[in-house]
Length: 204
Image: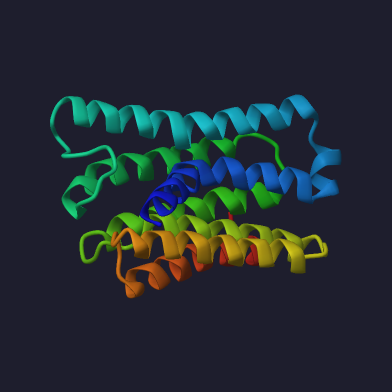
C-alpha cells in the first residue's frame, strides 16, 4: 500500500499540476481553442513547464548538491522554505510576463490564482507542514470548475474526477504519514479558494 501511495505522490506531484491544468483547460474550452493557435498553446505550455517544473526541480537539485536540503523530497518544513520562496518568485514573474502577452482573460486569473496558492503555501509552511500536494489538487479542481462555470460548460464529470483524484492523493499522503488530516484538508481548501476566486471574479 505504501508503494502505491508513493507512486501516486510522484504522479500527482504539485510541480506537474500547472502544466496538467493548462492541458485540461485547452481541451475543455472551445473558445480558448478557437482564439489561440496551436503554436501559441504549445508556447504557453512550454513556458509554464519551464517555470513551474524544470527550474524549480533544477534549483532543488542544486540545493541538494550543496547539502542545503536533506532530501529533494523536502520532507521537513526547514527544507521547504527556500525552494518554496524560489517557486513563489518564479510564479509571480511568470504572471507578470504573461500579462504582456495577449491571452484570454481567464489565463491571467489562473496564473494569479496559482501565484497566490504558492505564496500561501510558502507562508503557511512557517507554521505547519501544510500539504503542497493538496494545495495543488485543490487548485487544479478549482481551475477546472471555475473555467467551466465562466464558459458555461458541462462540469459534473470533470469536477467529480478532480474530487476523486484529490481524495486519492490525500489518502496517499496520509498513508505515507507525510501529513495529518488537518494539513491535508487545509491544503486542499487553500488551493481551491486561491484559484477559484480569481477566476470567477475576473481578477488578474
